[in-house]
Image 1 (cartoon, one colour):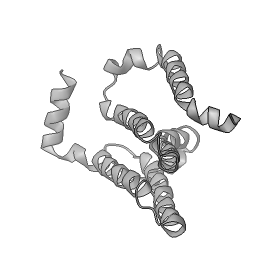
Image 2 (cartoon, one colour):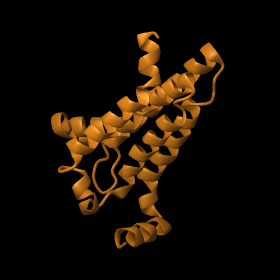
Image 3 (spheres, helix red, strand yellow):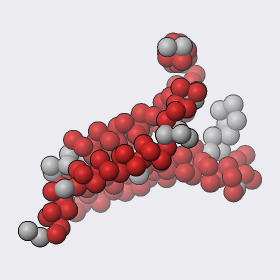
Amino acid sequence: MKPDRTIFQKSHLFFVAFFLLMLAGFWLTYFTKILDQENYRMHLHGITLIVWCTLFKSKPAIHARYMICTVFPMFTAIFDRIIDSYFPSLLPYFPDIEGPVAQVFGLTLGDSCLFALCIWDWRSHKRINVFPIALIIHLIYHFSVLNFYKFEFWRSFCNWFFHL
């Protein structure tokens, strides 16, 4: 049996090991403090990413594309922290929602990359089954981040959810 094939066939074990290491690594600093956090919607992306990768592991081409998509939700978290920490002079140039929203850079960069991948995958393989889905999900999420705070139904839902 070829090593590459063995690694692929046993890849679920690597995923389980990584997941357990992630739990161990973040247990004290993140998972035990989830209920202390005010922003629950950020946890949805992790659950979604785990489900995508798990559902399509039997189809390597689709699985690989979804694995690529797993990096895009992190763009916002990474770039807004970089801007806030190392380039605070750029903050006045970002939209303002009760303070500057540096996440717009990560949102735009991630969506632009996904859009480019949609075009590439269509031109090279005539596929529209992964990157467009990820782009639509990201656009809906980004719209909600930037706009839902304005709507009473969202405030009511958040208040209800917070008090569970």
